[in-house]
Amino acid sequence: MESQGSGRDGWSSRSAFILAAIGSAVGLGNLWRFPAEAGANGGGAFVVFYILCVVLIGLPVLLSETLIGRHGQSSAPESARRLARESGASRHWSILASLGVFSAFMIVSFYCVVGGWVLHYIWVFISDLFQTGLTGGAFQGRDPAEIEAIWPSLAGNGALTVGLDFAFLAITLFFVARGVSSGIEIMAVWLMPAFFILLIAITIYGSFGGAFSETVDYLFTFEPEKLTGPVMLAAVGQAFFSLSLGVSGMITYGGYVGRNVNLAGTSVIIASADTFVALVAGLCIFPIVFAAGLGANAGPALMFQTLPHAFQSMPLGSVIGILFFVMVGVAALTSSVALLEVPTSWLMEKTGLRRVPAACTIAFGAMILGALSALSTNQLADFYPLNFIPLFEGQGVFDVLDGLTSKIFMPVAAILTTIFVGWVADRRLIDSETGLSGGLQVIWRFLVCWLCPLALLAILAVGIFPDSIG
Ligand code: TRP
Image 1 (cartoon, rainbow, N blue to C red):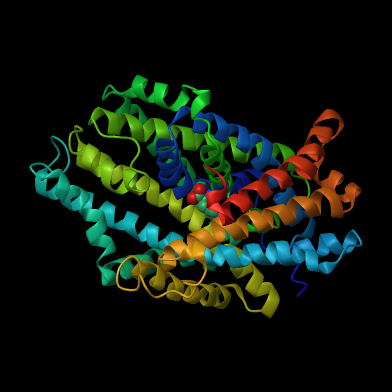
Image 2: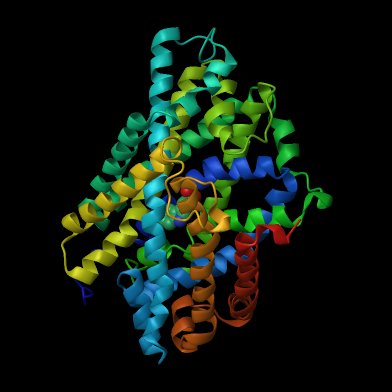
């Protein structure tokens, strides 16, 4: 069990950790979910409140998670157990991390299903490029209804969705199996800069379409009357998902960080980069959508139906389509790798298995659960174990796993994390890990002891009883 020691694999430098952690945070949550949520929740009010949540709730929890990991230098549950033991607290506090490990396993299974859809869209735009050539928009001469049908018909093709899911999972497994410094880190160091270049390039190109100022108005005009209860909750939940919190992801990655790294400063960099990408993703997607005269509020369909439709009227549409979905695929991959690493590191430590068999075992489980998710959008819609819980009535495996993790497990794990770090763990140990002092330390303690647990409790309550707010 004590896999710790100087021989433990880890990041080769602070910047490698930063890139890998940004890679974990930046994913489908930023590119798919953030614009969809902002669009569905009325733009500016959501965005402003989102930024507030990142600073006041996201950042303290991010720092709490990385410090647990860095202190323990182990898999997430063992790191939490170690900090509890050294603080004279019950070893059962490790439940906060075990819950996260379980959630990460569930999330990776359906995350790879969406990753598979992205692979499909890369292929759709490549074949379109061959058919219609470079000039003009994508899907020339095709009926918009036909373009929008790509998504439902993909989801309806069980064999194809499962195949693509497995393909995406296999790519993820490849990097995790190679290890932290020679797999995950190398991938992040190459792919994250490529991701940023693509994002900026597509955003600049899209801004020439003419709808840029309309987008800026839409995303940043703060209309206080639009800030309703449900909008605020959507914003907190999104901030959490986007920063990869409540899933032991940052505890696990923190476990590979050296003693000399300043955790507070690093957390600020990670949270800022993640928020920057979410905002730029909005500035990238909405001008293209508005220039085509389409609506912003399609929710999940924004990326898979509205945007491909918008590429139809964009010059070089199919090339931009390929680049856009390659960019999304890259972001999704650096996140799915982090998600798979969480249960893999736990299994290695628990059983003494080596990395390759441990990663393959977890991936095999994720394959089975993922296939159920992939199929649940059609044939298996009625087949799921939680039919008796009203919250999950009438949903497929995909939605149940998503709802269970994001509405229940993630907030519960995060509440336990803040109580543990704020109230239970030895203050001297915590202070020496954060390196904070003076006014910053007072603010951080207030946030982690009071604001975070209370705000998270509110999210949990509304997640379980959605009817309790308007
Ligand atoms: N933050 C990721 C995204 O924005 C998704 C995610 C949630 C995640 N929890 C995670 C990724 C844990 C890695 C580890 O898409």
